[in-house]
Length: 526
Image (cartoon, rainbow, N blue to C red; front, side, top):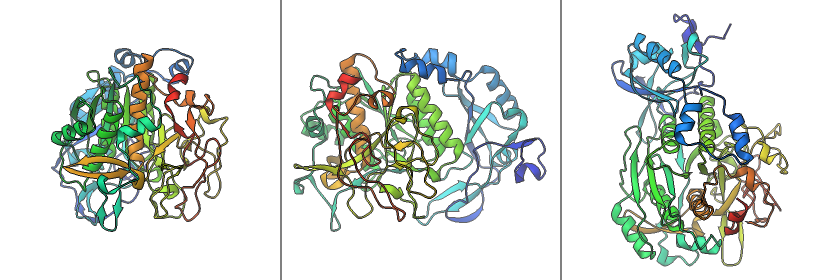
């Protein structure tokens, strides 16, 4: 008999805990129960019609990616499962607002009281030190036993902030560094030149998707930036997900992340179309943005860049499972996912003294992007000694993927030492002091962080896609077999910021910069 959680056992017979849905104690001050009659929207994730593992193995042997129609027919959710969810929702006073069989997502709308009854949860409001308020819960979500085989996750009951952007402004004293005052920073277009990206490609015919969980961009900034770089303005589109929109405010906000992503990706692949998917900063919004980009049958991005994340310990298991499944779907469609590996070194910003890696960079189905410090004389691991350093390490959640089976991965520095997915896979310039010259809300500034590396890799792969005449898709199995020649090996530095230790650079793969910095010659191996 399945174990029942407290809610199910205290008056709601027939409910069982939804595997992986347990939430920790919410941060902040409990300011009272969420209003019973407040209307909210909740996303349900359903199972695939068919397991996808065999297809992914065939694709590594050369099988072409699926079309989005083929994917939905073979690996989307089943209509019968949707019908069962609809009956459940109707019986609980909830309505189906929308659904997508390809995204395996059903959005329900209703009162908090009805959702609380339907899923056996208690929802309260919590106030964070900055004054912001969110809806939170503790423990497991409960579901009817008959839905257990088909319902894999429920998002949106809890809408606490989930991720942070991985960017850092260059600062001297209390002043933001301007490009005119920096002799060590780079225009984004220079990075493609310094790393010898394919000169004969400019991203034509490609689309790059950018995931953003806050902030916005101004069209005037984009026109001014690209004109100043001597480039034509890329086609830039803002796509709303779950009600979030392009909402620029000030240069010290998440606008810095959005502008950095657009300006770096657009400088490297200026003829690629850029679609920015804006979503709320919740696990629901984050996942919906990713699945919306992957299954976007209008824009059809071939590369999706993600510069947001947080330590694995901040996530529910259901969220990590569903994100990872979505990245598998991207691989099936020939879409590459590039993800920033984090900006707080081996601690990943956690205060327990242990080493952590960032998610979604730790998913084995993405290209995790670490950071270096690039100067005229050397390139080393990014670590400024003040807690700002490239993320990297050994996953506590994901086992060693097959493409890393022959890689000399270290054991985790945590006790007891364990083996797991090694992060990152690749790296490039990320130190704010040697960072990227960008324009944000009318202000020129220098920004670094692994946030810059994810769109940089997206631009490189868009050029590769153009030159090869096909999407390279999930590149990890390929790049781990090509040898050292298409990478600049980084052998100096470390990312130690955790009390219990961290990782050092070494010849070959290491948990600071992965295989090293990809050079333009990588296209010849894809």
